[in-house]
Amino acid sequence: MTDQDDWQPDPLAPDHRLHLSALHVVAAAIRIEHGPVLSLPRPARHHDIIRALDASGFPFEQHWEQGFLLSDGRFARRKPARIVAIAAGQFKPDATHHGELLFSEDLW
Image (cartoon, rainbow, N blue to C red):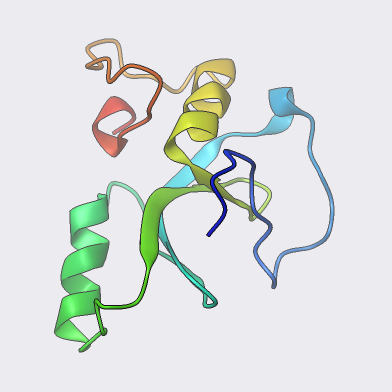
């Protein structure tokens, strides 16, 4: 994994970039290093994905990170996903502020 906060394209997603104003956060997601981006439909949270991975026997010694699936199919880490969610007006009125990071609790 890189230390950059850039958006990473899903290898199966179309190769296109939507303008920030056209993007929105679709789902909580986990990106496996050298592997897929896994998500469940909202209102699933990251712990729901982790439980599903655990139940399937996922080897947790692999490196993975939490983030979000965007409307154009890309994975975004928590910081850039927050920028997208703010631009899309997705924050719940009673959202807790987690600094610069986005949590699914802020959305649904």
